[in-house]
Length: 328
Image (tube, rainbow, N blue to C red):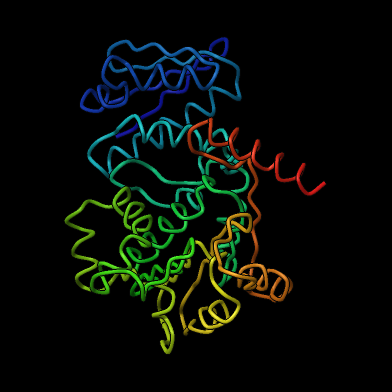
């Protein structure tokens, strides 16, 4: 239970915690406190069951909000990890807050086994708003911007809240010049290498036992894009990943699978097209045709939204600069 005694004395705030919760809030070796202090300019000290926060008023309010969310995460999960604290700090620092200084609940997408999942950049906040407001949302931008991960977290949240009955995840299964017909093995062996990024994302979000049960019960399906033909998907959350490698015909086929009570997210990077020959990317065509259609939203990510290793952003910027130089 989180209890606050508000004592503003020269920009100081005292927070009272139950002793059963104190160790979890502080972290092993006070690592949670150190993490907060390294991210927000405040100093925090603990005495008994009290935490003293010193800093300017705005930063104190941020940390107060942060501790409330940390307490809520601990109550719901029975544990609080450094990844939870890191993600909550990022939510605070990307201004994902309501007018009273607390984290906007709409911006906590999912509480996974590895921590709280939510938008960490302005592009991701815009993307989340687009997904909420539209039945079809496109996320277009470079690798590492969290498009797939955030989409899956939102889909899992919708499934657990009974807003949809199932999640369908798909990807084009023809990439880098390889065709399924020329690959050895049965269907699963053929398509799994192409679908492994989707499995990886799910594995990061769900315990293996729970994920296995959801797949076995067909609450989650992972299929190649080509196998979507002829289906009508009601009450489903459908995600198309690597959409730049869909043909124009495949994209139209996918978009027209949407049934009643369903949502769809289409993610891709138009600079990474692997289609053979001069085939038109379905993502590029859809961007031109559907830009102004009501109920369809587009979010464009850039290198400022990259949330992988810091070198990834530098690598993408360097390659983009080289491509621009070659075009000039």
